[in-house]
Figure 1: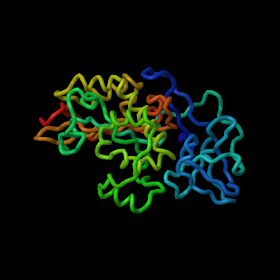
Figure 2: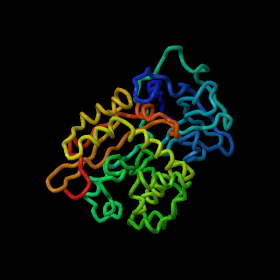
Figure 3: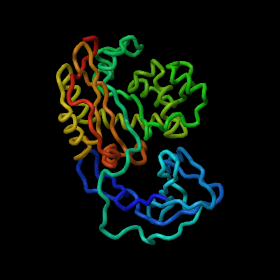
Figure 4: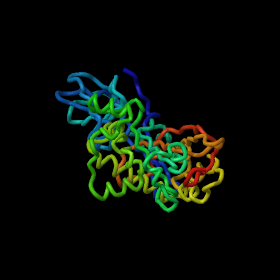
Length: 331
């Protein structure tokens, strides 16, 4: 079984949103083995109990960490699972070998080493509508609508990207892949969540919410309400940041990725911009900024700091160095 060193135990950025802060240990380093008992499952998220994988009774699994001290869950390696790192309840088996204490006082793991667990994909809607003018949400877009000057939600995507369509029937998968989103099951949400989602995700007019839940949300949580309410919480943090202000102030002008990265650092702490990738589209000979994807790691809740989630994720590289911030309407 593959061993994991302490250098792969991760940290998150502590402190208030937008301020640089000291790093704090996210998980408690442990080693040894976890021998599963009967009827055990391990989860991608402790809180959400998402993506359970059954553990084989009597099988030994490598322990990477505990969630706290004393631990209620062990982070173990489950060969063949995607992702292979899963949380198992400590009372569902027995631990053997390894260190008995969490870690040596004062020892901290290096920042930004946790594999990215989720990607928040956000669109600059005027640019999207340049390339998809016949979409309902594009035909109805106006200069004073929310999506003319704010980022819109494309989706929240569990990683790795091959993790999709969890417990989804074959007919729904086929309809989704063929773009027949109107034939997918309706997404049931509480009225406040539905109202906010329709504003922040104008693509709901084309059933984008059904597509995102079917393909990605089913691998994130048990309910659409949890998936979309937590996605919207992230969007509120982004749209109240210096990043949104930068884009809104530069409509019709060129913007470099270096400027965008600095705005992320200003809002979410030094290094946050390293977790962002920018995508551009070519339209009428111009390169326009179409989307940002933001790497996140850690358990997402409506109260979770976006800064902390970004700090714990793996750095990435952008696809586009600069582009035009598009305005509403065909240019």
